[in-house]
Image (cartoon, rainbow, N blue to C red; front, side):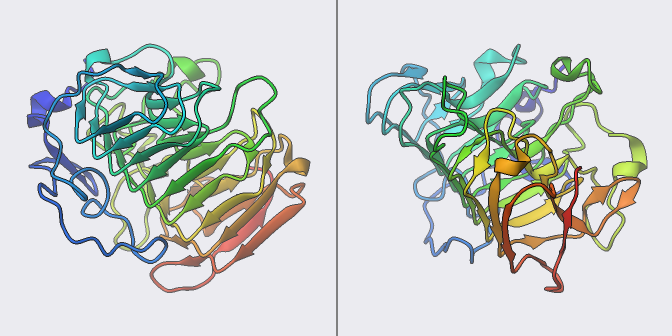
Length: 347
């Protein structure tokens, strides 16, 4: 049976490093906020619900498909998932769980921004914590949204970036992902969506499948699996980091995966993030539309937990050699400030 988080922990839980421990939400009253994007590292104490207002306890009873422009949903517990199909919708200081949907069938997101009517959606200071983890649950996707200072846990992927509407695959995607803390991904095997490939979830914190001008700024992406969720352990010791004091958890595929399956990825900015784990932390090795793609990757800090091939790797960033525009600077290991290797190769 899938793990029922609320039955184990009364619905109030704080993920830390190697798993989930019982406890009240980390912040229950508003606190002084001196957070600066790209300078302040997002953590459980400065990201998610309870930062700018008391932690939400009131159940949301409004519509789950939002069709009215300028709707604001704030300070609520949303035990289902939201579909935004309007302009200028704000979701603020909420806890979103997907509880009423349970395990799910087919691709599910706690907040879906797919409709062509979505414009300038903003999801901020929310806890996106799946009640019943499964191979189907992601957090937020896919276009015309800003995700600001949220906390995600228990999902397969945290963020999707693409516009699948007709003719929009390579158009401006209008996505900014800023100041979020993402940890404790859930791995599953078997995975029905990859049954003909390798039959396991392909976990990325962010997957960019197309679009122009996406911005990924000042986040803390920990690309590791939670040992209490899903089909753990994962491939035994071959996916365990072996360096220093890194938590003994297998890595997921990447912090940021660039695949261009929907359209070309152009004018992408990945700047001033903290990234841990992943087979390759930023993986742009896919050949698809490589000759049309363009990336700027600068000022990011990494741990030593990457795993490429049969063991740990010094490769934090891989970009396909056919990508014509790649601007990089200041990408370093967090602990010793030495430059990370940028690998131009197909991955």
